[in-house]
Amino acid sequence: MRFSTIIPLALAAAPAVVSAAGSLGFALGDKKTDGSCKFQADWAADLKAISTVQSSKIVRTYSASECNTAKEILPAAKAAGFKVILGVWPDYDDSLAKDEAALIKYTPDYKDQVYAITVGSETMYRGNFTGPELLQRINKIKKAVPGFKVGTADSWNKYQDGTADALITGGVDILLANGFSYWQGQTDSNATASFFDDIMQAFGHIQQVSGKVDGGIELWVGETGWPTDGSKYQAAVPSLEGAKNYWKKAICGITAWGVNVFYFEAFDEPWKPKSIGQDGSVADETHWGAWNADRTPKFSMEC
Ligand SMILES: *[C@@H]1O[C@H](CO)[C@@H](O)[C@H](O)[C@H]1NC(C)=O
Ligand SMILES: *[C@@H]1O[C@H](CO)[C@@H](O)[C@H](O)[C@H]1NC(C)=O
Image (cartoon, rainbow, N blue to C red; front, side, top):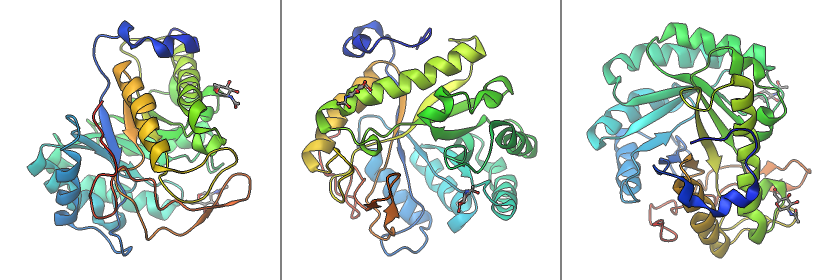
């Protein structure tokens, strides 16, 4: 896929420019509905449900050591023919060390299952690290487990505004850009336009700074989605209809255009505590799944 700089929004309506479709993956939490840790059989059941959608064969997780995720998910992924992007939580020295140890211990036997490793989830967006500080942690992991693609996942605007430039010029292999029209308070009808615009700005900036469109850093949308229930956020209203529309327009549209996407998220997570949105309002994050917590699909995920 080629984004020379910033692609005009009008192109979003022209998926015909593309040869190969982008890959579709899902973001997975590591807890069961009651908030306890998933084990291998739970991950296996998750992957079984996900494999029914198009030809989806890739998922991403957030911490290799929390809930023994690397240990428990990798054998399930191998049995199901899935690949996994494993996460590292670098926010604390302790979590970084634990995730690093889990990667060293569990990845060697599952080289074909580990698609890549992301160090950090929105750490620049949350103000935990500057680009150079995060790069240092990415390089630490790269050295600890050689042979894997390593990068990070962050909000689209942290790529667009130059915060991540040190990563782009510093040799990372893969970058995931998250984009939520919902958290930008967009209406259902403007959600897809807003999403395309955000992602193109992020990818455009990365390609401009790296000077490469092909053979450069591998790019994915790391998280995007629309909640089926929960709290409103400015003009954004959660609804099943909204999620269905978002799937058809945003997810089907951007993958047809050749962009790789992780949908956030696969399954509802009813255990999740309420969080506070950027504007201070209380946000319910328990209904973002494409599937209900019991792994029944909420809508058709065909394109
Ligand atoms: C860093 O990350 C943790 C969560 O992992 C969070 O509690 C903290 O507030 C973050 N922000 C800063 C500025 O350290
Ligand atoms: C709709 O999305 C576009 C693209 O991001 C944006 O420029 C525009 O301001 C949005 N419209 C509204 C009403 O927010």
